[in-house]
Length: 311
Image (cartoon, rainbow, N blue to C red; front, side, top):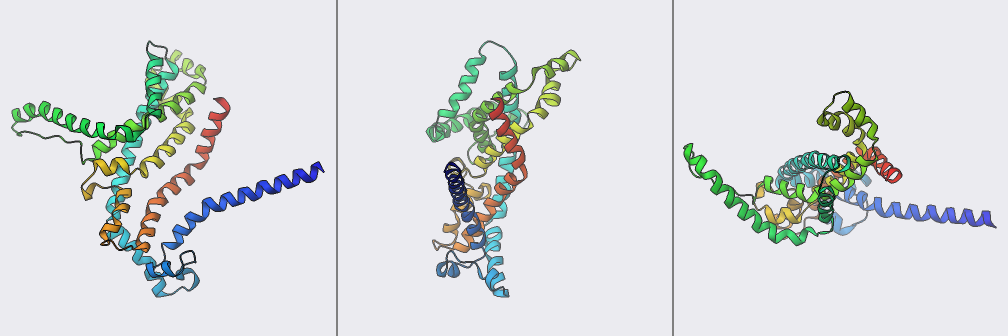
């Protein structure tokens, strides 16, 4: 009886896992193959396979090609893609560099105020980012005016005239927000990860005459690679799909990121729903995140496992 109950429980567990897998995977496949349909075909059969798979023909292939052409060229998704890639890449580089240095100092050094600094970083995890949106908007305005007043005397002395600095509607301002918003999580994860690394390696390197910078760069960072990859993936997913701050601080069309471009499709289509174009745009946004996860999945699993075993 116990063997029968065990087999039944195992069967139910596999059934639940298969259902969960279908619920997760099917929407992605649905978005992918729906991007090959025309809007009329989507209205007629929203969940059916596209004609390019069921009845391959030149007209069916043209619908697929037209959807992606309108998304990439006509809707300027090529520009939005480059903007997102630039903003996210620079933000990730700064987040990992600053987060790793701060986490290493908090994990390996004893100094006055370390607990206060760590608590301040942790407090960033409990403050909703929407709460600081309006104060941050005015802070950027005040900071731009202050920088303008500081730099103007120097530029006038050099014969360059007055200068106006604005952090609004710039990728630099958006990168500053992304870095500041992502550092608390990054420092929290990496501090715990650096604490699990063997301190004997650091001590041996210092005895051999290595500096702390060399120890961090050549010894600790390679050992912390699983943790770095883990925080990089989580930050990438959040930044790549970030919409609210980009909406508030970016107004020029040439500076918009992919989420803003997706939101503007309906306006570019003169308030007429072009679902083929919309699904093609969704695929363009979705593919980089899937590729990053697939390529770094092993490191992500290793990082989470090590954190669970050693934390």
